[in-house]
View (cartoon, rainbow, N blue to C red):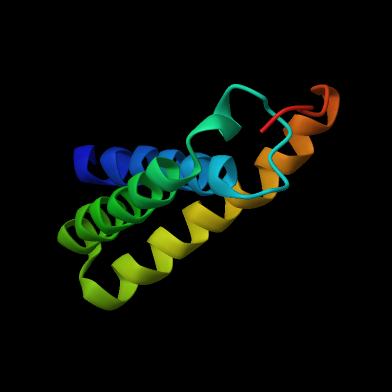
Length: 89
């Protein structure tokens, strides 16, 4: 149970970091450190896969990691629609 929660949290934070690294990021505070956000997103994705794999096994862990990551990756731009677009980068 605890590993599943760690996997969900790491996948969501990885998706947030990947969104911050993208040029479509609408949150001004997140879009300032793109290179660091890219590496942070990749590292958190690996942590999420490891946590899910320890909880469920390698194959099911990969599916669970990608499912939770994609859910967050689809929700973040939708949540950012209310934020004003960043003007300086």
